[in-house]
Length: 617
Image 1 (cartoon, rainbow, N blue to C red):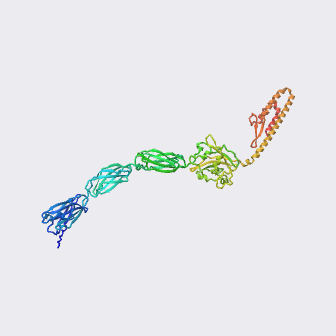
Image 2 (cartoon, one colour):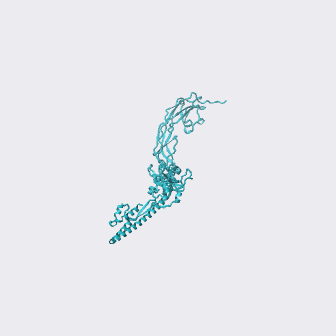
Image 3 (cartoon, one colour):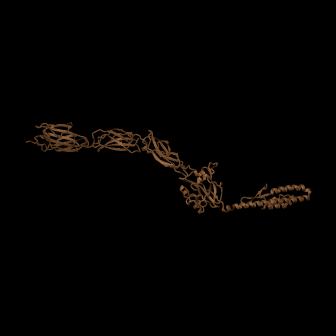
């Protein structure tokens, strides 16, 4: 029959006392029952986190009859942490103590078992945590794997572990970048990869070790991240037609935000391209002032679409991120050559073919074709006889929705559009295309020349005018950017209908009257000459002595008659003009002309009266 040996009961009054960050004391008393004649000793084990043996002490009875072999004991720690202490039988009966050196902030489990003939007995257990302490100062800060936005940071720290330790890696950035802070948990951690940094930026690094008791911080170490291509420029703006010049566009921008310089910027480039032209590039040097405005004015063609690309280039010739704007150059109101060339667009002095329903004017063709500020979309003449308010025509839609001839003629020729969209084609085929001294093309256009009875109601037609009426004309030229109106020209007056109908009759009657009066004057002249000759012959017979004198007065009288003779000529308007073949100023009174007869010719008064009477016709 087998005999089972009982193991000892657990030691009593196990206690942990005088706990510090680096040690505590252990005490215990003998078991209540060892189930053996002798207590051979104790096994004291100190474990970290209930698993790892930190210390093992075997107490052996130095004067007992019985004994034990360590190799026969179960559950022992590794011999590297084991120590033996000899105690007398009497000492083993009393309280035993053991001070142990430990590390801060660690929970230790203390186990004590008594040894008898059956081996290790039941255990007595107690757990206690040492006090944490402030860590040592981290040192040896180094950086490796430095990139454009990241860096790996290394450090060192001396033990022992002071408790639950956190490391704070601080990267203090130059303004205006944001400093970065990273926390690493665990005393054994010795490196950290910091990410999310700014490219080509200066940082100062520290590492702080901290426990619940205190913290210690390393010295600062400086480094800079690596450069990369610059970011986008800021404030990119396209100004249309700066200064009202529609053949210009202004491109302006500022440097990238300083955090996106990413390197040392050398210059800025502006690429300009269109759908049918290769890109051209302009460059501007970088200015250190981050608020500097970079401005480029480029020549453009109105209504053409341009692509503008702006980017920075750094000292390593890295091309930065491109900012792109696609913009159509706007059209503007056409250039007014009235001002630039100082010419009249509609001449008041070259009005021709004036009839009761139409008249012809001379225009400057260049006004309607001036496309510097954009392609001409519509042009022409507008006219009015009353209610002439030209201020409502600002844009192309205003011009294209004006009243036509049909509307205006029913209201007494209020403001209306004279020309249709194809009027320039007709005008060009009729023009003489002569060049003036101001290098402009003059053409003729007849206002009121069309018959509009068959023209659709909503179309524009150059219909007949009203007779005897005064008209004002304005030239109009429109782009998609607006309409240019010339100054107001006029008045242009159509012929009165009565004059036009009776003109031919009046002209014929005037010619007949002129011929009759001329013939009558001729008869009177012959009669007066004949009478004068008869009178002088009679006087010569009476006084032969005065013959020479009489002849002399004959010549004077003849000269007088020639100087006084006037012939009536019928004018084109039916009135009778008097052409005077005389050196005497016209408009003298009859007394002055009569006084030119001297005393020897006063008998010729009859002849003078005849001449005077001929002037009254």
